[in-house]
Image 1 (cartoon, rainbow, N blue to C red):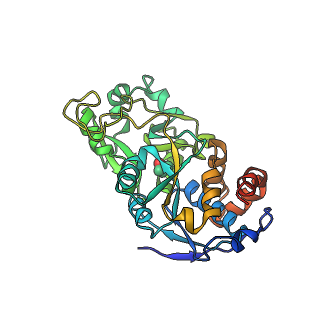
Image 2: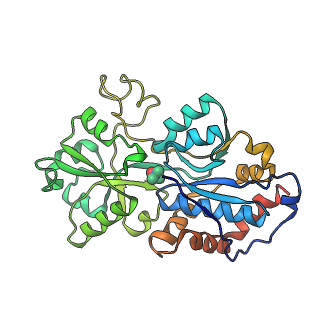
Amino acid sequence: MNFVKSLAVGALALAPVSAFAAAHNSSDPIVIPIHNWSSQIVMSNVVGQMYETMGLNVEFVTTDSQAVYESIRLGDVTLELEVWEGAFGASYRAALAKGGMVDAGAHNAVTREDWWYPSWTADACPGLPSWEALNECADLFKTAETGDKGRYLDGPVDWLKHGKERVDALGMNFTVINAGSAAALWAEIAAAEKDKKPVVVFNWTPNFAEAVWPGAFVEFPEWEDGCDKDPSKGPNPDALYDCGNPADGYLRKVAHKDMTSKWPSAYCVLSNISFNNAQIAEMARLVDVDELEAEDAASEWLGANGSVVQPWIDACA
Ligand code: TMO
């Protein structure tokens, strides 16, 4: 179910530039999708507030993080700011091939999304980070819920991490449980921290978590293009998803094709935007550690980083 809320402009450090609205940009709202992890929500608010300082109208819509690519292609949603290669590469490539989307370039950030453990887990399972070593330690991760298998807490289902397929493809002694929300992943780590219980959960970078809990990604067979489409890729010749996610994945921006003519200034700014790992981790931290509302986190982030974003706007004037 979708809901739409209009954006209230926070106290921005950016100078309003109403010339943008007067120029060639439509007064229709630019529709920005909101998903279910903090950096994406804050970044969407950051860019929405940037657009508002340019005199443009913005609307947020909460959408599924896979179906959004079809919505952008059709023009129901205007853009997406966080196309993570590991989680969304397949949906993104499929929609791009059908037509209707324009690639607005990549962020500076390098991303990784995969099975991850906090450092105390390696004390109990010293062969880590190898996936074979993890599998030999599966007993350490047994719970009442998973019986004689180890528990792996995967992300919410819409991130399509294919954890179950990977466990089957590699013959692992783990049961995959999907978290209901990103917050459930952080709760699992925080609960395990008290008595240094070994846990393995889905995690990613850039994220706030790396500054809070030192840890590492499990090293699976290296990602090969086509591992999700061609059984011959990866070590199991008969299975898909027998590879890790890309260890140096992209983070891209994409827009509906008509954004370039309907809101040329906004598209210009979108194509200039390039956040790095530290900036994205900080966006998430403001919500997940400082517990700000996303809109306030975005205002605070912009207040501290006006000099980062102002050149991207000025270059489009
Ligand atoms: C898409 N995500 C960053 C949650 O892995």
